[in-house]
Image (tube, rainbow, N blue to C red; front, top):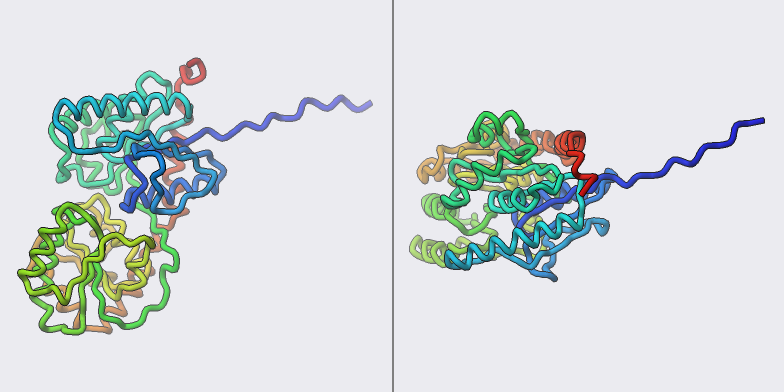
Length: 384
């Protein structure tokens, strides 16, 4: 007689990953989150995204339908000291309530203020929190209060993810021991397509001082008379629009520089570009630079901290320029715009070198972090 069959194994649902960030707009962090979340779904993981946005906000980048998105209705805004404190308290309460409801195996938070709020909200809930810094901690201004909170609360995190070694070195040794350096992935439909030899120099980013578009306008003004067929297009929106438009007019560039804002079609800037420039004073990584390289665009960038040097080998797959030097940027633009064979050579090398940053490779690194956190999650998680 054959032994009776035992009970069928019970399938267990995968541990849920909860991602927390301010919103799902058109920024670089939002793009990376969409790539991570979509790939985790493809790998059989469960994903919930918590944002501070108002209900009804529409994601700029496409998300898989199996990704749960919860909007807490407490977006960041300008308030007085009392109002700001009240808003922070409300965000923490709503975030804590949402974390209790989602019951994730791990929480992954992005951006300094959100990282701080998440660590407070997750306190004693029995879930591991990984915080991710997406900028240059030495240069980014978040305010003295948030700096103090970060220095104290990051100790509670299971781990810290930065995009460059330089950024990780900005933190104390105890945090570095629990740190991972994971670059941004490149995920660009049609990346690597063959390009025509057009005459559009493109820049992309928020219209804020960090992105250095004032420096770029001055550099382009120096070379524009030598290259009358070339135009500069700066995609993005931000608080400095009026300042930059005034600078454009003062430099006599109104008919040579376009500032179309944020496009509703992600990636359209690639389709209309023939060369790319990154003029940032500092960066956490510079995802648009990598996207341009993957798309087969010749690139020139300030050698700012941090990011560009980890993607560009000067003269081989792009041009690196002395940080914040208008004269050096103008000379690099003169060299790039005036030599079609150089553009073709740099473009081909840029496309090839960008393959180091494929989605699969980068998400493999993130999986290491997630699995490490899940392996040590506290027993209290099962008792709450």
